[in-house]
Amino acid sequence: VQLQASGGGLVQAGGSLRLSCAVSGLTFGNSAIAWFRQAPGKEREGVACIVSDNDGTVYSDSVQGRFAISRDHAKNTVYLQMDNLKPEDTALYYCAASHRSVFSVVAENYVSWGQGTQVTVSS
Image (cartoon, rainbow, N blue to C red; front, side, top):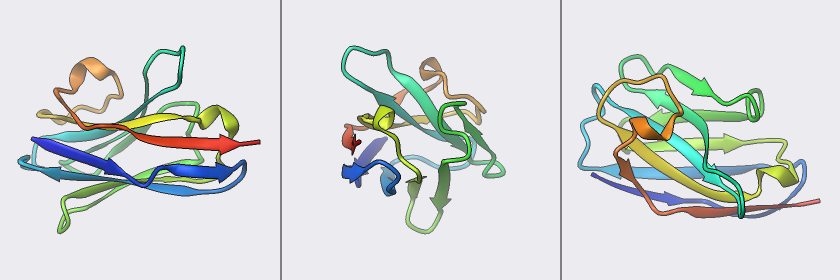
């Protein structure tokens, strides 16, 4: 399984970005894709996940209402739309895959990881 994250960049507070995670080698059925982030000096944080069975989603409290995760089945790509960005959203964002349909943003449930894409939000 390979995951390729892209779409990061520099944006002002209140702005928006859309991250993409291109997935290959994974059958979307019975799986989940999640986004995680890690800021310097902080622990990795699960942000959002989408489950294959019914496109159900889970969000962390810190992004609920501002971020939206979605999937394009035809393109095997998962997106993270990030609106109303805040400086505290600055981090390296990773996407990861689970081979089970888990409604969870706990890292231990995910076995395949992509490289990160940097998101920087200026105040």
